[in-house]
Amino acid sequence: MSIDNRLAELGITIPQPAAPVASYVPAVESNGLLHISGQISVNEDGNLILGRLGEDMTLERGTAAARRCGIMLIAQMKAALGSLDRVERIVKLGAFVNSAPSFTDQPKVANGASELMQEVFGELGRHARSAVGVPVLPLGVAVEIDAIVAVKP
Amino acid sequence: MSIDNRLAELGITIPQPAAPVASYVPAVESNGLLHISGQISVNEDGNLILGRLGEDMTLERGTAAARRCGIMLIAQMKAALGSLDRVERIVKLGAFVNSAPSFTDQPKVANGASELMQEVFGELGRHARSAVGVPVLPLGVAVEIDAIVAVKP
Amino acid sequence: MSIDNRLAELGITIPQPAAPVASYVPAVESNGLLHISGQISVNEDGNLILGRLGEDMTLERGTAAARRCGIMLIAQMKAALGSLDRVERIVKLGAFVNSAPSFTDQPKVANGASELMQEVFGELGRHARSAVGVPVLPLGVAVEIDAIVAVKP
Image 1 (cartoon, rainbow over the protein chains, first blue to last red):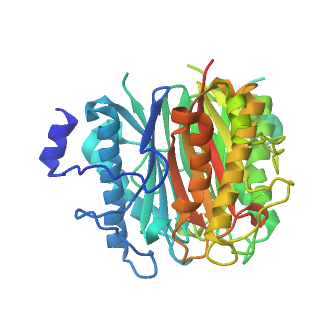
Image 2: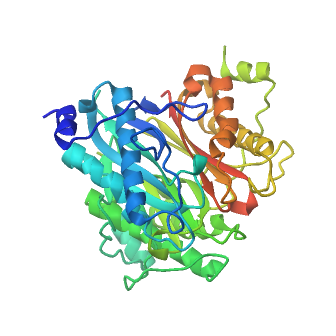
């Protein structure tokens, strides 16, 4: 089954990928790896998902924000590769979670993106990951996630 | 000399690698590079090394925590590669140090892992690195470090 | 035109690259990719550019600090590769901005380095990027940026 069909089966709509907020590009393919720029949390309507975990945002909403970052990452893969069937493996996610100093559930938040990758890509979606707290993110968003993806030629 | 013999000579015991805290995998090998998930500071007994540098943890204990992250990274290399002799080069460490805003010795902390890599792998252990402060880490640990390792086929 | 000529045309002087602050190396080339250690903000005189955005440093000075990190990255590329003409593509920049919790313009700060890469390398300088806030950086500097560069054999 193609990844596009799998997305349809899951009821996941891949939006237009976000244009970079600044003077860089969304993704660069080189030496078999696609490096994707950090994707910030944006909801289905294109509005920023703002907030800080442990302060003004629940774990549940943070996890949903991370899932949205994952959807934006998939949107960038599709734009960069032409077809999602060129994804050979999701290699690494780097998750940055806007966190109050007392909030220590960054892994649960990042799972929103990690579980999405496995739903969509199956075994190929199983990736390495780092997840850390940060005091603030661009524009005040709750989560930012970048990615490295191995691609078929 | 094999890396296992070198570890024995150094008196370093490599534990069972930690299972991921969440829905991802410890390491992914692709295109000659092994990307290893962020390893959090855990002591010899398997207990988390908690704390924040510049607040409730000394530099000395922070450096020891980073060394433990390095040992966990080596444990993941061994599990992923079968043999540590498949390590071609430690390419990059990414060190995240749980830091009070006044603590600026992240490089000294991260040296705990960097010096370990040179002890164990010699010239092949000399790596690029970034080291930054973060306000909080998963489960409240003191240090998290991820890695990129070049591997022999 | 060679990159050295382009730098001369732009009036950009590439300094001696910084020695690592600690026990690691400035850059590692492997599998077609050069991973460069995080470069901290240092001015033309070799003095650290200290400060925290949103607290004691303006956006303009922060952007200039990021540009200096970019110049140090180019200095490391030159030292590691022999010639800057071996740069095939700037693949990824990872920008860490010393930020008060209320400061959300990390992308504008990081543009100081991103725009430099495009000025110097043209199309080959267009890169993927992540930019996040951190509460503190080594030695108290304002910005730290690491990089991945694709290189010609």
